[in-house]
Length: 273
Length: 189
Image (cartoon, rainbow over all chains, first blue to last red; front, top):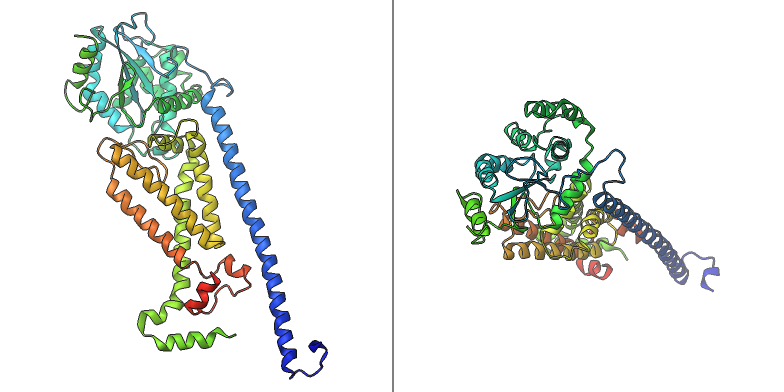
């Protein structure tokens, strides 16, 4: 064998040394590669595992409210997360009727356009409701939690709305209007519970109900209701639906609330007037 | 064999930018690689902080059946984060570029679909999404942004050799290697 030759200037000995070195380098490279492959596989598996846990946890959270301690479901809400208001202005009142046109209004207390909607169309909707033409189902949803600097204002405000709809059903509309009058800027941390309490008190909500606002007992329900609304086709707020059909402002015959009287026209048509 | 001779010959044989290319390219590829990782992290973190929003953004495209929408919306940011880590490490860079490009193709399709259908949605690419007033969706800008991302991916696909990569470490090469002739490089890749 050439490697046994002592002379270092032997060209064949050099060749063998080089070949050996090369072989060793290849073995090292193969080992490194194997190590890296396993690390990459490990990272992918950890990521996948974390994602699946997040998925399972989320599914549990959005589908059931009862599992969370201290969390409540407002019995007065419809299964799709709406608070129905008829001519009397009371949530879940006896004046609600399936013979009336059903108008669903989806809003987020943080959404500036919802504030404009309330300002511009609140009176028009109230008139339709008071005339007994339409029952209005209000859906406070929380799609703008990431627009309140981590303070989750949308969820907290909607939780207060749900509490008042449930426990002071005649004050829900007044409270909601007042919340839009005092609407915080999008991107700010929103209103604190204490500030919401002041608004609720001014709206005539009884003190024992106002005292429950900081409990935030309906946040879990708000999350489920928001998910339900999204599944039902909600992609933004404000959104209105007539008899369960979400209105597309670009579609002729649908409500385009930016236009005066559009809601009245469509509702009256649906009512056969 | 020594690569120095070959490189020197190459450098002396060319002028200007082309001569500098073998030196510039691994640095440029490193920047592209890290930029892609940064983009993925910027896309993943807001989604992870608000998974519900991520799910809603996926749902707003009305492309996938409801049965898989929550799973897709949840897994997507984790997938983006893992891909970012792989990019930062610089491991299997060419394959990572291919996965990136497949992902971008899917996103471009999604945005084109929403545009064609006239949906007024935000892409939700960097969190948020789903919620914009009618007519405010800036589809051309979204597409331009996507085109830039595709360009990054293509660059890394063509020039996967980068400095400070696990790819080099695996092969036992120096982390900041001398430039090699492009012919040799392609035989390596």
